[in-house]
Image (cartoon, rainbow, N blue to C red; front, side, top):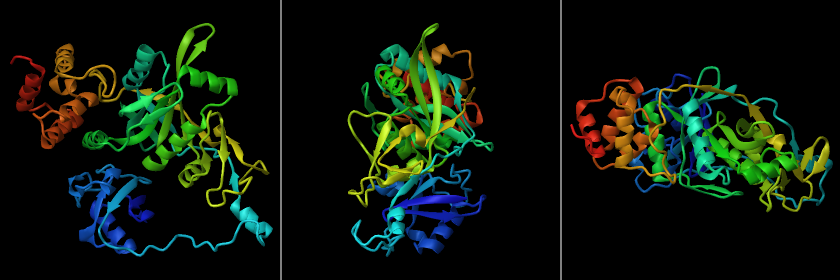
Amino acid sequence: MLLRLRSRDGLERVEVDDGATLSALKAAINAKLAIPLDDMLLSKQPGLLTTKEPYSFRDLAINDASLKSLGVAHGDMVYLLYSFERQVEPAVKIAAKPFGVHMTLGDVMAKVVKIERQEKPHVSAISFDRNAANVFQSYLQGAFKFSIKRGGLLYGHVDDDKVVKVDFIYEPPQEGSSDKLLLQRLTPEEQQVDLLAQLLGYRKVGFIFSQSVKAQKAAADGDYIINTDELIMMAAMQDEIGEHCTTALVTMVEEAETGPQVHFEAFQCSDLAVRLVREGWFVARDPVDGVSKMVNPKEPDMKQPVMLNNRDTDEVDNDFFLCPVSIKDHEGRLITSFPVENRLTPQGKTELREHLKRLTARPYVERLSDFHLLLWLAKQPNLDPNDMALLCEAVREHRPVLEGYRVIIDSIAGIAQ
């Protein structure tokens, strides 16, 4: 199992056995990076590196637990915090030489990036819980008629056949227009989402966004799938989440015979695209279109920094960086009945009462098997993190909910006992 370590000193990699425990991972980090074991905090949440309360991050705290049981898989990013002062040598030492001064052909070729299409994605398919996917697209269609862009983070797991299984979609606070999408990331709410997801046996597995009707028409007229802003966002997400990260694109297309139809497509960015976005090769420009302007960030005066089809250029079609992923669907173990967070629709005690009464015929644990409801309950003063851990365990294992919690939740909803 190869894991990526992000710390204040940069990005590094460490290798452990597939069945390794958290303690074994710490020992491997100690052996490779010489960081003392007692000066080492780990988390899957990037907020660890910026928080003033690092010991509040408890998702990777059980030393005897296997990494798999903690939701850590091959290729994942793990965040590492320590106070130990390290002397970090640069991975590559580059001798300073102005471009174009006494350069051989080999020097020039070494600075040119060859753009090649990646034939296969890292996953075999992506499968959406039908209800979760429908709730995402129906809100866009019903509330906005796809007039704006909207995004979300996909949570689920990756099975042994490398199928990404998506069981719920978290929609963070965001600003969307017909052309732009800005997600508020790494917020306390997203940290809460990551923790609840882990307690339920899930993790981040991808990204979803919609194109507005205006943006989709521009793409159709220009004969491309995504624009440069979208490509940069997709690649950044893939760099953050890991090589299993898959992006779903949702559009509404006017069909001549059937009228407006909602389409789901899925892609991964090529590994090269992820690296080039990380290093800053893509130049943002306005208006955006289906062609990316490229620049070598270390040699900004280089006029044609990439080679495509044996031709030097500074522009590449964005579709060249995409790997299509087939889409399936399934019925997951969660429902999506409670209102989704960060929408125009309200979330409150009235909605909780309506949700519980609407599902009266179901066992109580099934009525609570809604991630958006659990996230709302986690924000209520009546329930602390230990309570939420027990509720999530009941949902995960499909066990009866303790009577005391039923009384508390019914009381919040204003339901008489």
